[in-house]
Structure formats: structure tokens, C-alpha cells
Image (cartoon, rainbow, N blue to C red; front, side, top):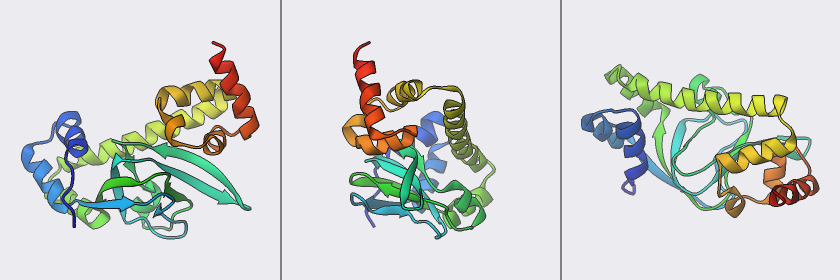
Length: 195
């Protein structure tokens, strides 16, 4: 197993959550690394998600497939946690996929390792809350965006949230995420350039 890079993990555990050096070292003792090639799956539909990842480099997308059509749920960039959270918590099969859009390197923690940390100290619940808060906030923002904003407003929010997304993600995937056709995205881009 390769040694984990620490800067992303240090940022979350020590700087954002103010956990001790000892807790950081304990996390690293359980952590592994995984490198995904472009188009390789991190999570597959109908399989149980037994680990989460923290992205060191690369980009992933989560999506569901219905009647041969893909619907993008979210994108994940460096510094973010990626997991099929419902499956990870319940042990039930995933209802979608998480796929690398370019070579991606992650620090991973298994469900067994996560549970062991929670048993060792109540301080680890701070990390668990961090994970759940991240996913809840993302979910709420996405739902509100679809209910309250136009496609153009959703596009502007996407660019604000992920400033370099167009350098890493195809226009087809961006359009799918926005809930529009690729030709509609071209029109939105021309409106945005006009401002």
C-alpha cells in the first residue's frame, strides 16, 4: 500500500475540525489510498459502498442511469469527501454510480475503520458530523437550486461553486447536471460571456 499524502487530510482533521495530532495519526493508521483511472468506478450500482474517499487530486461524478440515459447528481473535486452515503450508513446497495472523470487519487477509509474510530473516542463523532453536514448542505443547495432558480442561475452557481469545472468536465456532463440539453448549455454560455 502506498503512503498517503497528508495535506488534504490535515486540512480537514487538524485545521477545520481542530482534532489532535494523535487523532490525525490514528486516522492515518486506518487510511489507505486508491488511484482510479479515467472512467473507473469508485462506486457501482447494486453494490454496497464499504468505504469513503477524500480526494487528493482528480475529479469524479455521481450519476444514476434510467432507461439508458444518465443523470448527473454531483461532481467531486480535490478536498471533498466522496461516498454513496446512504449505502455506506445502511449497508444497502447503491442506487447509482460514482466514476472518475480523470485519473483520481483518494485517501480512503473503510466502514470497519470508521466504526473502530467511533468506538475509540467520542471526538470522532465531530468528523462524522462533518461528513453528514457536507452531504446535507450539498443536497439542500441542489434541491433548492432546481426548485427556485432558472437554468441560467443554476449554471452561474455551478461556475461559482466549481470555478475550474469546464477545464475538467465535458459540456455533456455539465448540461446533464443542470438538467438541460447540451445545445441549451451553449446558449447559456453565450449569455454568460455577454455579461
